[in-house]
Length: 189
Image 1 (cartoon, one colour):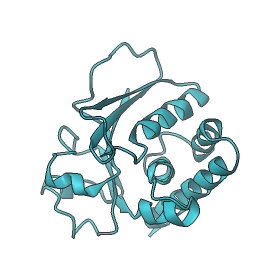
Image 2 (tube, helix red, strand yellow):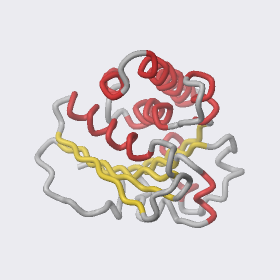
Image 3 (cartoon, rainbow, N blue to C red):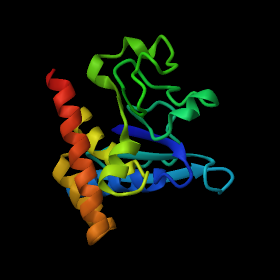
């Protein structure tokens, strides 16, 4: 089973990101579940969502304490939360930030991850470019597909199109593809 934790703030599409991952997994014939956890339900409050993907039925229902991957939609959360808590040295970290990994205040343990296992990407800027709004979730899903190879870009795109038909789906898919290509170029360097 592959377990993903998505951190962000209310209004950034954290819950939708987890749902889209689950839909993409279903499209590939896998089992998946996605669910949120949040306290105060207001715009800008910290939000965390979870997604599990497996080749067999998933019976767990509790929050993910030891994720295989962490997606961080808002790096300002580093100041108040240990978003990477429980992430193994073999795990993946994907951070929405214009700052480089060296500029971010990351724990020394995280710096021991393989280079492609810990990435940063200015997902907010790519979202503004392609969608016209600073909602980074689709961008990060495209990047996640390239980083982990857990899901295909095609499945992510289909999930986005199902959730957001029409022009919004097209724009979100363009953003996801741009992020996917950007991460693939980083890996080939």
